[in-house]
Image (cartoon, rainbow, N blue to C red; front, side, top):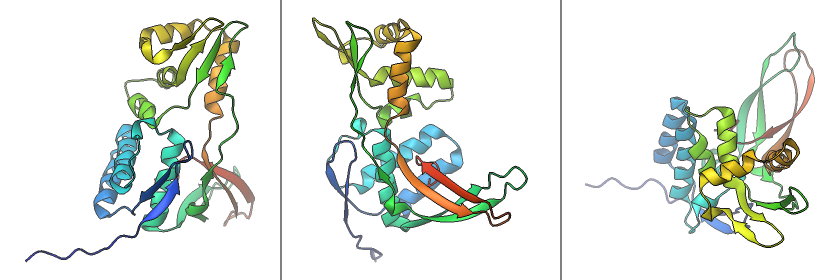
Length: 236
């Protein structure tokens, strides 16, 4: 005799921050949660990132191109999925910043209210009077490919940066970098001076993030704290 199915899962809608595409999804089930817990226990960043995307793919019914999702897209989407799957609040541990205290404080936050603000940015950066570079935000795929223990932090940064240069623009032409080899792109980056390189780095450092303000008083010393959580690390 076949066992009965336990749940007729509800469906929800959410909007991808970078594209504004609306997608329909269901909460994740124990089989998906099990995969994520195993990934978390592995302490392998790449396995953890892959498990998040695999869970999104299993639960989202709308056709989307997962390879083009940005890091903040995936963070926001996973957070919305988590809110509908295990609850719209989460308990997290935050340490008191007082040097003599450093007590751990349990803080309850509403994860469903976390959002991504999309700034009005110029994706074209002028390097000099004749050459500009067209940028795009790094995709989650780029980050996953760079998340390997074989790379230093500097190597990871350069690897992601190469994927974020979309085109080189001169007075005569627009050179689409997807048609250029990684070695050629790397040579182009290395030919920049520190001021030009700083503009590229600033663009990436200021890309959108999932953020949430948190206020709490330390349970031990009473010190008031105002912090801003960002990224997905506090909730995965």
